[in-house]
Structure formats: structure tokens, C-alpha cells
Length: 230
Ligand code: DC
Image (cartoon, rainbow, N blue to C red; front, side, top):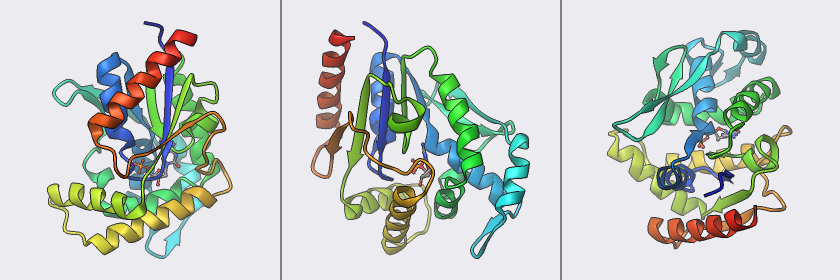
């Protein structure tokens, strides 16, 4: 079967990574979670006290960018690649609500975006890739053969994220998770550089009332149609 590039964009907690992982496994494609890269940079900024509740030293972060080395290493037990920051596995710390509360501010910085987009484009040179994020179909791979834009109501998404964090033993309230989801939606869609917008040629999927299985089957059908035409 002809190899293509699949770009999945959408709001936070719309299940982009769940779908992307299912597709990568089924098609034997590489899966890249670009949100993990922005989260790792936010985590680095937190560790170095460049960002906090009421401050953000963007200049210091920009100056430190050459010292940030990001790498995905495949974990065969999990069936997907994990995020490493300067050689350290940061999968756990980057998923906390603290990192979620700073990541959109870090992702607004153009210098950060330029560095990460370059790395993402390099990963896609051989196609056979499914990448999820906010600007994949618009900026990273504007020529992707299939672009999907995922949406769901803020409440549905907050409920999903709340459940996920609870499962991990993170002691957060539903209200805080909803607040974070709404805040990130706002920053992600209003930033100057590469805001979250739907690409003209993207297919929109609202999965508020779709099961994972239904969504997966629908997208596989789309892929089959696209592959016939390329
Ligand atoms: O997908 P996620 O929730 O893990 O992403 C975390 C944040 O990173 C998100 O709020 C916005 C930013 N992001 C981005 O600006 N561009 C991307 N391609 C991926 C994520």
C-alpha cells in the first residue's frame, strides 16, 4: 500500500493521540506526538525557573534553546515512542497539570516553534508517518495527503482528561481541568504564530458522540480512499 503522510490537528484532549497511535499500529507507520515536544520544552523552562505562575523570561528560554535536545525513543512494551529531554525520559512529568498550565505560553514563542517544526519536518521526510498537534496540516506538512481536524465540546474533553489524570493518581478537580482546557483553547487559537486553525483541505471530525472504534473505522476508510488516488 502506498505510504502517505497523515496530519491530525485539533483542540486539546480530543483524542488525537489515541487515534494517531491506533493508525500507526494498524499501518505500521511512525507516530509523532508533537505536543510532547512542546511539553518537554515547557518542562525544561519550569526546571530552569524561566516560567512560573506570574513570570515568563522568554529571552532566557530562547537563549537556552540550543541546549534543549529532544528525542523520541521507541518503547516496544508500550508500542509507541517516549519523549526524552537531554537524555532523560520525561513522559511522566510532561503530562502533569502544571506543565499543561504553562505549555501554551511556551508554544507561543516563535523561536521555539521554528526549532520544533524543523525537527518534525525532518522526521517526515520518508512519509509513512502520522503526526498530531495544532499546526501539522497548516505549517509542518501543508502537503499531507490526509488532514484530519478533531473537535469535541470542552466539557467532553475536560471529562476525558480529568478521568485520565485521576487514573494516574493526579489529585486535580474537574473544574481545574475544564479551566485549563478552555484557557489552552483560547491561547492556541489566538496566538500570532501558527494558531490552531482548520486547514482548507482538512476533514473535520467531531467525536463528542463517537466511540474510539467508530472513529478508527471511519478514518481507516478515509485512508483507503486517499491511498487509491495518490
Ligand atoms: O497535544 P497536547 O495537549 O499535548 O499539546 C500541548 C500544547 O502544546 C498545546 O496546548 C499547544 C502546544 N502545541 C502546539 O502549539 N503545536 C503543536 N503542533 C502541538 C502542541
